[in-house]
Every structure is written in C-alpha cells, then in structure tokens.
Amino acid sequence: MLYAEYYPEVEMRVVREEALEEGREEGMEKEKLIIAKNLLSEGSTPEFVRRITGLPLEEIEEIEL
Image 1 (spheres, rainbow, N blue to C red):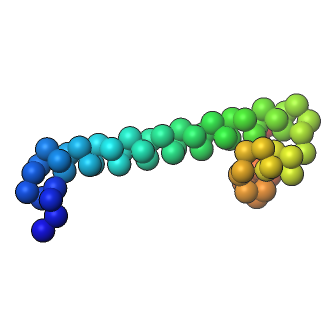
Image 2 (cartoon, one colour):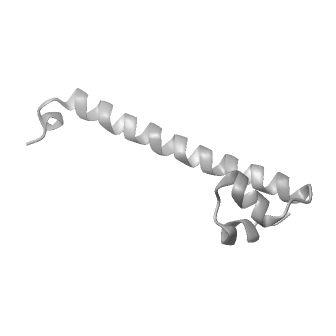
C-alpha cells in the first residue's frame, strides 16, 4: 500500500499538487498559442514562431488570424 492510502490528507495534497501542475501546463500552452498568434499577425514566419515558442510547425500553421 502507498503512504497516501494510509493518510487521506496526504493523498488530497498529492491530488491537489497534480491538478495545479496540470493547470500550469495548460496555461503555459495557451500562452504559447497567444504569442504565436501575435507573432504571425505581425508578419513573422511560421518557422520563426516555432523557434520562439517551441510549438510544432503543424500546430502553428493551423492558427487562424
């Protein structure tokens, strides 16, 4: 058995931390998309946007301006 199974407060803390981390990651991904859209609207090439944001080129090419 896991330590968290014996102590519900520990399990709740672990679940909360995992949820917070997932939320942070989703927020960072959304921010990258906003930056990509702004760069594209200012005339940047998709390749430049890829280098700056780290997003896949396919995802950048799907962004609607």
